[in-house]
Image (cartoon, rainbow, N blue to C red; front, side):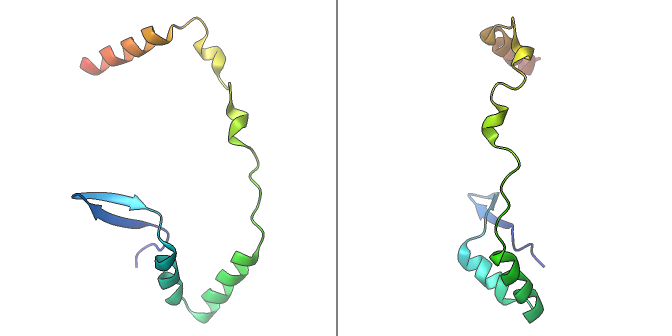
Length: 84
């Protein structure tokens, strides 16, 4: 059985992973047993937990690693390493 939370499409000859549409989720839910549907309804009624952290808390994290490193020199060295 396909994972109902993951949809793989063929687009221009490539696999594309995307979120399912609401209609696809409804179709998947229609294949659930009565007990599974009841559990799903109960789960959807539960308030969503707030994230423990905000992404903005990462701002500046690890900046000391880049002290005294010229950004352009770093990028040039990385690009040179691709050629070898």
